[in-house]
Structure formats: C-alpha cells, structure tokens
Length: 165
Ligand SMILES: [Fe+2]
Ligand SMILES: [Fe+2]
Image: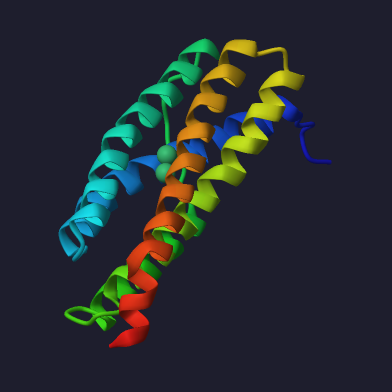
C-alpha cells in the first residue's frame, strides 16, 4: 500500500507548484510588456512583474514557516498557458488584435494563480498556519486586482481596436 499522505503533503506539493509557476511568470511578464502596443497595457504588465517579485518572496516566507527550503516542481499547467500565450504573440504580432490576445493570455495566467492561492489559503487555515494564510490572501488580492485591471483595459480599448481592424 502507498505510504499515507495528508493535507500537509498536498499543501507542500502545491506550494512547490505555484513557486515554479511564479518564477516562470516573472520571466514571461517582461516579454509581454515588450510586446504590448498600448502604453497602459505595457504599464500594467510592468507593475504586475514587480508585484510578482513580491509573490515569489511571500512563497519563500511560507517555505520558511514550514522549515523547508524553497523548491519548485514543474507545473505543466503554467508551462502550457505560457506557451499558448507565446503562440498568440507570434500569430498576432503587428496586428490590431495583439493587445486583446495578450490580455486574454494574461488573464488565463491570473486565473490559474487565483485557483492555487484560493486553495492554499484555505488549506493553510485548516492546518492552523494563519501567517501563511495571510500571505496567500495578500497575493490573491493582487492577482484578482490584476485580473480586473486587465478586463478594464480590454473593455476600454483593446477589444474594440481588435474588432475595428
Ligand atoms: Fe503571482
Ligand atoms: Fe499574477
């Protein structure tokens, strides 16, 4: 029979998953900022890149709270979401639809992060790790604000620009 595993094991595995994902996102965001045509969208990606450094830092604090060293574990989901984003960047390069495409790719990233942080926050509460729950809550708020800001940029111009061309 398989060795017994518990919520703490799930928590630790998921922490490694999002740690890998955040570091991957940290590398992807500058490329998206360079690709973006609208200065507002560029700015949004640059700001979120800076916030993402804070997300990596908070995850390192959670590893520390657990007495574990920070370690990532390949996350196929984020690899897939980011490579689809790169496909959009290539396929729509130089077109009026590029920004709308970039926003949709970035929102897929944000939503992935939101599911991870939502789960981790809840598990941290169940495990009595209140400090970790607070850290996850802070990051979750920033992911959610970013998602909303991206919707705002899509509504304000990117979608209409893509449609009109
Ligand atoms: Fe993040
Ligand atoms: Fe994010």
